[in-house]
Length: 450
Ligand code: EPU
Image (cartoon, rainbow, N blue to C red; front, side, top):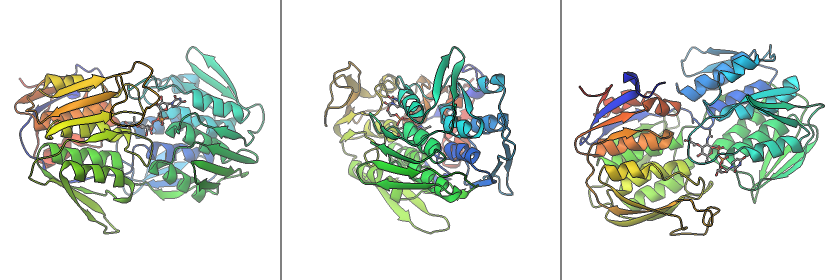
C-alpha cells in the first residue's frame, strides 16, 4: 500500500491509560509455517486459531498458486487446506508475491518433494538488518538440491529424492531450522541438525509435523534429529498463541499506566518476558482456564525501574520483545541498557522516539552483557536509555512490524497528537489492532487529522 494513502495513516491522540480486554490468536511466526507444512501432506489439514493478518493472506495466495485449495471453516479462524491437486505454479503467480514476506523461502522443501522444483521470489519481511538466506541455501544443497540464482528469484531443483544429512547452523536461525525440518521429514534417511533454534513456534511446528506422521526428536544442546518417512498425511492443529503480540499489549499497559487482559495468552512461552516485565515494575496475573487462558498486565502504580537487557535466541529474551520494552523503559527511573544480539540493525527506530522526547543513545560496542557477533562489525546495536522522559506527539513513519507497533505505544503514552504513516505494515502481524486499540479506550482514527 502507498504509505501516503489515508487508510495507511493513523492519528493517535495520546495520554489515555489503556484499559480492558483484547484477544490474541495463533502466532504469526507459526501459522504461515504450519500452512506451508500442509503442502507436505497427502490429506486435508485443518488449522485452528488463525489470525486475520496479511502474512496469512500471502501464504494462502502462494498455496493456491500451487493448486492447494484453502477455505475457511465454520469458524472464521479455521483454515482447511487440501493439497490433493498440487501443481507447478506459473512464475508470474509466484513473482506477484515478491518482496511481501520471508515465508516463501520455506516452500522449498515441500515443493521439491512434491514437484522436484521450487521457484522462490525475491523475499521481503522487515528491514531490520541484512537478513541473508545463506543458511537456508547451504542446507538445501546438503540435502542434494541444486540452487540457481536468477534475476527474478531462486530456482531450486531436486534431480532425485532428497537425502538426509548432517547440518550445523552457524547461528541458531529460526527460519533455517524450519527449512531443515520441512525438508528433512520426507528426505530419505536420517537428518541431524546441530545448533538449531528451539523457539516455542518451532516446537509447535514439530508438533504439526508429528501429527502428519513425521519422526522428529529434540535433544539437549540444540540438536534435532529427523528420521525421514515416505509419506505424510494431513493434520488438525490449534496454533499456539502469539507471545509476541501479547508482550506488545503488556508494554502498552505499562507505558500508558493502564490495565490490559490479553485473552488467549499463555504463561509457559513467555516466562523470560514476564520476569523482565515484573523487574521493570509491571504486574501481571495468569489465568490458566484451559478453555480460554489469559494474562492480565498492569502498571503497579509505583515508579518503574531501569534495567540492563540483552536479546538472545530462545530461551533468552526474544528480539521481537525488544522494541516495545524500549518504549516502556523511556518511562523508567534511571539508565537502562539494551544489547540487541539477534539483528544488527534493530535499534534504528529509536531515532523517532528521541524526536518524541526520549533520550536514547546508540553505541557500536556490546554494552551490558556478553560480546556478540556484531561487536567488531560497526553496527549500532546497543542502546542506553535515560528515563523517565515526557513524550510528545510527532509525525512518525513505520520502519518495520515490531517498531511500528512500538511507535503506536509511544504515541499513546505521549501528550498530544501523533500522525503515524505506513500502518499497513502492522497488519502483517497484529490482527485488527485499530479495533483493539479503540476497545481499550485509545483515541485513534484512521487517516490524518484535518
Ligand atoms: N541469518 C543468517 N543467514 C540465514 C538466516 C539467518 O545470517 O540464512 C541471521 C539473520 O540475519 C539474523 C539471525 O540469523 O541475524 C536470526 O535470524 P532468523 O533466521 O532466526 O530469523 P527469521 O527466521 O528470518 C524469525 C521471525 C522474526 C524473529 C526471528 C528471531 C518469522 C517469519 N520471523 O525470523 O520475527 O525476529 O525469527 O526470533 O518467523 C517479527 O515477527 O517481527 C520478526 C521479525
